[in-house]
Image (tube, rainbow, N blue to C red; front, side, top):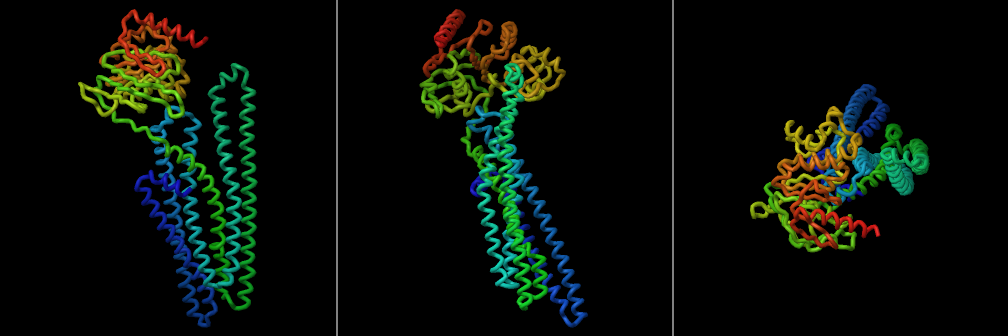
Length: 566
């Protein structure tokens, strides 16, 4: 676990390392200062037996003042230690959440594994780790120092008493460690069960209409109840184990206190320990016993932290997809002998693809579902890296080191719970009000936007119809005025023929001087194309298109669908 923590903390800023160093110094000072009142109280009690009353009173006042000053200083350093720990926790948690998002965003999984459950899990893990790890380490550090000081104090008073008490401490620690292994298993099971419950619950809310429509609500409710019962069962077992642990360690603690009292009384009766030593021993025996209790409690928290650490490290260890710098002025995209396949798939998605895309040209990408159209687009856009061959972005005959700015209408694009205009401005925050109104007109969103009165559109556009969601995503992709590449994945999907025809006519000016790619399963005459990119068995061919070619394309698509059904 400590190796994993070192891996996680290595991503933090230098300021955090200074905070850790300062916290360590303050904790050590607190532990050292806490030692001296033990000797002062011993000397204070022994002073009472001095025959010279005036000198005894003077020593009592002096030692009492020193005792109070040391206790105040100890409390001050203790408060500073807690304050530094809390600041460190807040700083670490906030920074870790940002780092997790950046790592996940740039990873290979970011395009395939989005879910609310995953987002909540990452936030919860970062929050839990930030809240418990540093406070537990702080307490453990103090406990170790306190235990060492306690042992030194015991040895100074009586070596034999120390030899009697210390074994009880090790028995307590061993018992705690044995129980902790079982507790770790329960903590892991409980976290997994809670994730499953959250997943079922959130999907039940999002899919409530579907469940109600097909009279599946009662069955799904039983599924949620079963998940909740599983969480309850694991939680109950974990609670029983924790109570057993507290009982066992608490009993050992009381036995230790009893042994201290009996042994101390015996040693006092034999004159081996002074009354001052006995008083100090009874007042500060917690320096030897409390660290064991604190260690057990913090070790339980660290066990739970270990689960969060493992999952956080999985995200931090994801392969990063380093995107190139975005540049402008791209007028050609040259694909030279590009081949690509996904690691877990045997078949080659693309094989030796060789073609050139030019500015001010519209390209229709054709091929049956699952053939590799989206993969090819992601390669062209720079989201994926070819396994062989190269994709060059050219401007006036020179190769540019980067990728073009682009607008991308995704089939499953995400909409934020903000207004329509706010979602559009994500693509271009500098869009003027006049340009916004034109864009709303082009995408047939005027009436929709007026009906909402600028209000938010719900989670992932839940307040909009499917066609309205598509039009907002289209407006978002067209808002990138200075882009050189436009990609439209199933533009016609979800739009009625009249709206689609209207949008195709109005968006023509936005396609000028750009490379435009259209993935369409059922292309219509509403949009004209300059070239056809077809994929078959991993082979990509590019041919120029004439108007009469559209009829042949439709016929080919129809025959392909019939063949796949048969």
